[in-house]
Image (cartoon, rainbow, N blue to C red; front, side, top):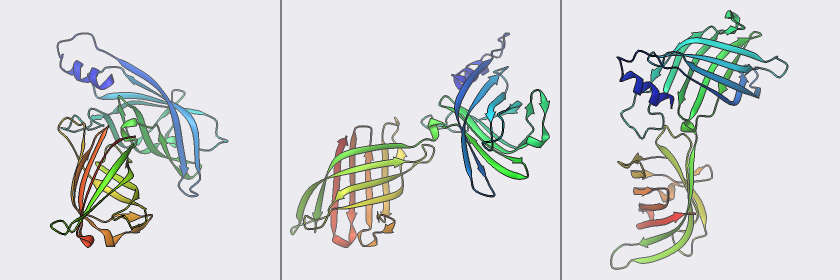
Length: 284
């Protein structure tokens, strides 16, 4: 892998032969007319080339660039683009070891000729073992187009569904009443580089006489377990949503628990009902 090769070579300063590395990646390029908001999607290919893997520079050729349907395919070549290694002490971070770009402007060449009219502004992105993501702005025909190439799996979402049981204890103590009900718990983490997740409880009831509802906890922060196999929750207060409306009468407190690939354990208090809920389940 590219990152592994870079690190390995960097540890061998006495090596005479310089290593190189290249890879061709095909994906979609989405361009947006920033004036009209019109979006256009087309196939493109990025060829990544490292001529000397001991140096932090990469050559990129973006093949099949089109900002509008009637535009002929153009191949942009970017030479000696500097990159940095994504700074992180967390080896479980999905972007750990990525090569990242952040250039205010780059002039590409087309057919070996430098083309300033295609100057790429706000050039950002990353190359990792998952793939390539690039984004930039170009003034084409007097209009600024914003282009995004690639779908780096490290930036993709994670989701999981669990078949679970919820046990709700109302008035914990001598006068406690307990009910248990089945439900589905779903998790969606929209960006794996951000440690927040939406949690949806489908067909959930706090008490038997209550109609089933679907509630969502939005942007719940979590931490990873030491081995990276679990997402851990410890949140003082969360307001659930029903659809897009806050469900303020059922604020959850002391929300704790964990979720792994196969198991779910959650606990929380429901202050307005003087109740405690315990939810456990296994992946569907």
